[in-house]
Image 1 (tube, rainbow, N blue to C red):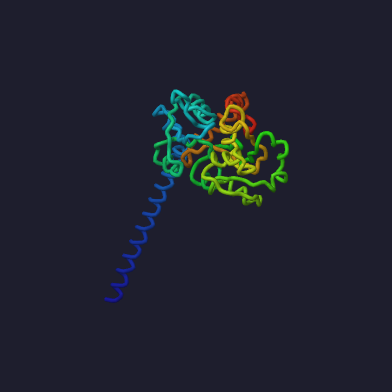
Image 2: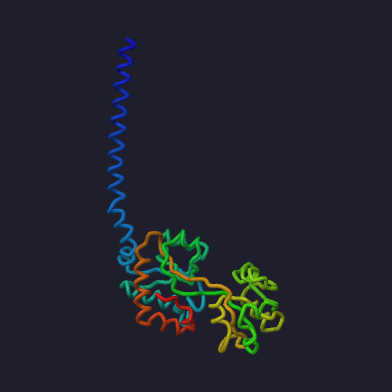
Length: 279
């Protein structure tokens, strides 16, 4: 009886192992099929095709002059906005600008409420991990702002070392002031930091280069101020859904438009052509 039971158990075990083996092979075959050329093809083509099929490129932005801002008629303009419009035309679709919560930009992409984040976005590790990013196309920086009539005195980091700075609280400017060991006080925002310099309660401010273009110099509220020293470099890029083929298509677009002078022409309209990254 024991021999019979042992024999029966052995048969059951063999059958079980055979079933598992066949199931594993079948599953493995199915997985290979689903993750093979079909899935690869989808990753390479679906996002671009998705945008072309719906006929619109939805661009996630915030108001950030001179990259994305509205003219007197409510139309979105700026270096990034103009480039995004040109890229949509290149794809054969309409552009649509969507103001987003910047902290949720990756979620907006993944949820397909937008197709791209194009708004002076620094290519840091967090962004690169969450998005499929383009090549860098623009060099931003934190810059020193001083009265224009004293600018000649402050052209190096060493020359500004003993100045009293105003910086935005919790900002990249504050980080740079700490890195260089500058003496600083914190202001509510970049505009207030500029006001401190203009009124003489601070010798200098540190603000974003692009903000300096929009807010200082001739024709601005702070015509008596100007930028001098660049303290760092922050490269900007454009973000798509992870795995999107649109990133590589944008790289091709950038290369073409840099070569024919279009990118420089657009940047020159906003006074920032000197910060373009060669494509």
